[in-house]
Amino acid sequence: MKQDFTLRILPKDAFDENSVTEYLKKEMHIKPTAVRILKRSIDARQRTVYVNLTVRAYIGEPMEPQMYKSTVYPDVSGHRTALVVGAGPGGLFAALRLIELGIRPIVVERGKDVRSRKKDVARIRTTQQVDPESNYAFGEGGAGAYSDGKLFTRSKKRGNGEKILHVFVQHGASESILVDAHPHIGTDCLPRVIENMRNTILCCGGEVHFETRMDRLKVKADEVQGIECTHLPTGEQKEWFGPVILATGHSARDVYRMLQNGQIELEAKGLAMGVRLEHPAEWIDRIQYHNKEGRGKWLPAAEYSLVQQVEGRGVYSFCMCPGGFVVPAASGPEQLVVNGMSPSHRNGRWSNSGMVVEIRPEDIGTDNTDPLRMMYYQEELERNCWQQGNRTQTAPAQRMTDFVNGRLSADLNESSYAPGLIASPLHFWMPQSISSRLREAFRHWGKQMHGFLTAEATVIGVETRTSSPVRILRDNATLQHIRVRGLYPCGEGAGYAGGIVSAGVDGERCAEALAEALS
Image 1 (cartoon, helix red, strand yellow):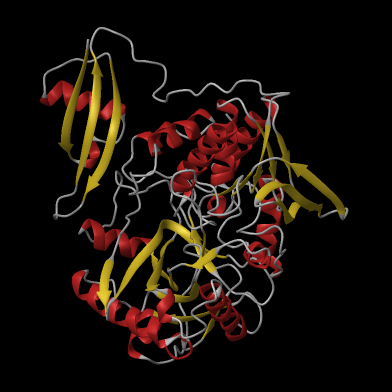
Image 2: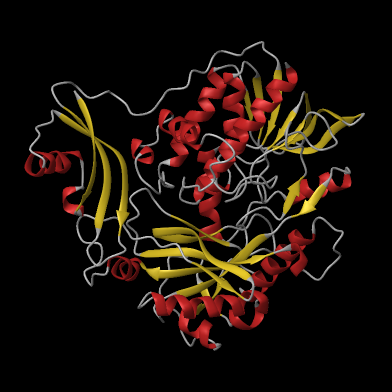
């Protein structure tokens, strides 16, 4: 017999299946042979912290060997082909879905495979040299591969996010992502999962080409014929033919320029920009768990999610990384961009979050007809930050209280940011539309959360890559570009997703639309 229970119990009783089994025996007087946790969330709204669980007790019968639902991927060797540009979550899930639908994917990725890419990412931290083709934004796995692997999304309207999680587990992610309210894989585990996804594509007859940059779409009579590419190590020109799923990510600015020059319809899209805010992890644990001892033995590193309206624009926390570290996320020369990431155990000394302000196209006082104007604004802020950081990846920073009070910091806190920090008046040189709203929001949250506004926290500039500054226009019904047939703008870089799961969902939807058009 199987029986499901909804429990609200103390963290020590919810630590693992064994402790839950003991709780069921003691408090509910049942003796299960096994217990599986189906859903888990932490309720820290009151002084006593509880864990909400949905559990399945197996009484007199064995537990199923796995939680996830396997997807069958057939051999598509010799089948019709489709091209996928970009091997981030949108591109990878598009390729896997094409295989399910009997279409052979050819994936081209300008960056390196995820293991080789890791060396280039490390080089940014140690030598401050950015490879414009292999960095935190470009390469197998996309930007999400090195930003914690967070898998939480509120979007329910565009497809099956649950399936995305099951595919990740099938390729080696922990089953805990099917359980936790805010699932994450972790930067230490995600590369192996991504490699397994690539191997599935290859084993089923698909192709994956790294260090292969798409230079041009081949368009004839308003229909995509294929793509022209350059193999970067050799300079060899290559071309492939077929319909194209364009999943190039939110940082491929040369692609946006190429599309605009090719008269592909684009529009400016709102996004959010600001800073990274870093606290000692124990500081956030004490605040969120209402306990001077912090998280204790049973609880994970604490998270927060903050939203405030200031002068008609949203100010909010973004990509919160408990127990993580701040990283240099530039994708080219004369840029300084920061991001955050966490290992799977989230056991680092610091916790950080993007703190960003909503910016709409009408807020930018430039040519309102130029679809790339938000991108130009993004570039200008990143270049200014790079100049403030002595034209290196040394990041300008302030103590949080100094930022709020408008004064330069005499010294700075220790930080997880490996290239180093330099004291700089971010409150002064950042656009006032951003800095003034951040300062007001920090004051508000400091009153809500005692200890949040503190000199022990560090404001680090700048966080700009929250989403794409451009939307590639597509038809809502067919998901093809509004004018060019056979072109499927996909994922975060096309302006239709915001994070790993929603990009994966959009990749699957584009694959399904392409298959329907072919049939």
